[in-house]
Image (cartoon, rainbow, N blue to C red; front, side, top):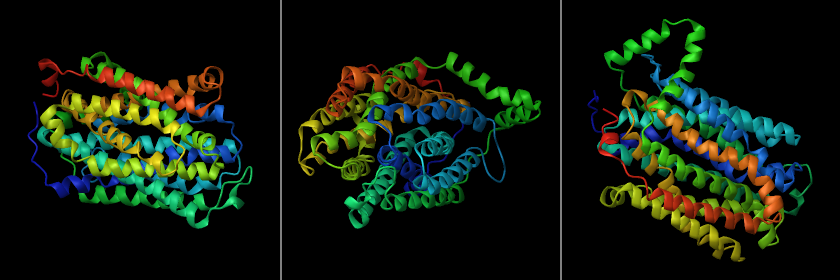
Length: 439
């Protein structure tokens, strides 16, 4: 049966999502600062995809397992989801403190693996946390509020990079094998935000206790031998995939092209600006950060405005239009050489990013069983990291052999994939049977 949940105030929904700020600050650094660090430490451009494989693999393994585990967790003191994103935040903070001190490329790559484990451990339960707390009529507001904090976190991360590069950067930082000192400060801020924002939400937002049936299931799991408890999340993931609503398979098709394209964009903006604007690595990284800064400002502005639009026109239409807009954005960037004019396409990108970070989660949360929300949110995030994994394994050879080691061609390739994802999003229809899936 569906548990009747009380409606929350705007500020209660705001407080429960504050922790997403720190998580997304960390992801913002990964989008903009990690690849320049790899380049500083001597990585060739065609190696960037494979060096980023930590994100897809850790997401594929960690998120569904943590989701399944959190479904079967309950503590009177700590709750159900909060222990997991608290531990993940601590792990992420430690890695962010260490990352800019990486002496060698292999050390930085290893830290990225640990950082991604922490971020994924924090991210997945947070998605389920919102679904746990909110009644269906407030799900759109809850997930778009997360989208707002996605924009805010990445905005702060990239704003700090731009600011510190301006204040402390210069040609003296372009030393092969050395990470510039001005990048350190952004990572230190991220380490502090990662833990403090999570703590704020943990202390401000109590979790809803499980029903008597759920509590009985949780206690049954606790009574099982240790080996069986370890194997249980894997069994639950397999069982959930077998029973997965067809709607989620259609979302997976959209995500295949959407996230493949996004990974290309994040990896190749710095090489793109080195080519189109003749920038050094540091200048190109700063320009890339300004791009991210711009689209995340737009994301913050429009995130909550998408709530009434999706209610009026439907999530499918708004989502599809946002993907087409993102395709147009990426198609124009390579042909603009002015550092200020090139920010204009980021308006469309920002609208798209706001929709991508909120609308699919709202739609999926409505069609999955309430007591399996954690594992299904983990599976949804598997649909994100699988395309990223495919990209890390395939795009390096594509970039080198088919696209002529040319970052302009890489961006146009990503634009085409976004257009395909937009057409696939038009197929996201929810059947009446699937609407009853969370009963």
